[in-house]
Length: 114
Length: 109
Image 1 (cartoon, each protein chain N blue to C red):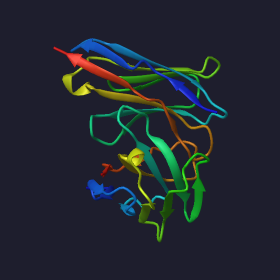
Image 2 (image 1 turned 180 degrees about the vertical axis):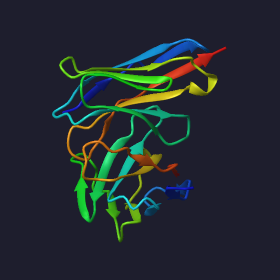
Image 3 (image 1 turned 30 degrees about the vertical axis):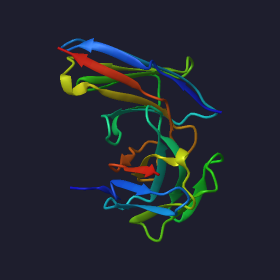
Image 4 (image 1 turned 45 degrees about the vertical axis):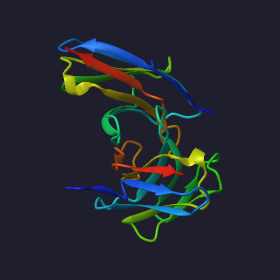
């Protein structure tokens, strides 16, 4: 059973053309994360939501925005993609409130910028 | 700031034991995680340590020494399917994870 779903799995966009990636979850977890992972690099946290509270990492560019309209869905908006934004974007969820909880990752969306 | 060091690549033989080391320096510490990531796929959780010592889970064990900023992942009875990247990650705060670049393990027959 799919638990963290990301659509689309592959996304191609043009330089400067806004793009939205989506993530949904069936786990009812209150924390949702967006990571960027470039080839052979570590996943880098962009931001996360704890319920409706948005937490931005200090070094996340303004070009990246996020929306969480409800518990199940979270969106990553890239306002003006550059060539350097080509990467795998991973969504993850976690049941908050405890120090230890496993993060469940979606399959990722691979973004190509032409 | 945060820093995590892991070997970039390792090779081991099917049926053998391999130890993947991780050293870290973080501003805070709320636990250390190990994830497995096959090429082109999402990371999957392997283990979690918050207290010093060894946690065992089947063929996988993970060790933590907080005073040394050191952890290792031990994989026993290696199988070909264990070929993957192994990511060490630290939770510095309440809800964030800081990942290392991962160790690419190749299991050979």
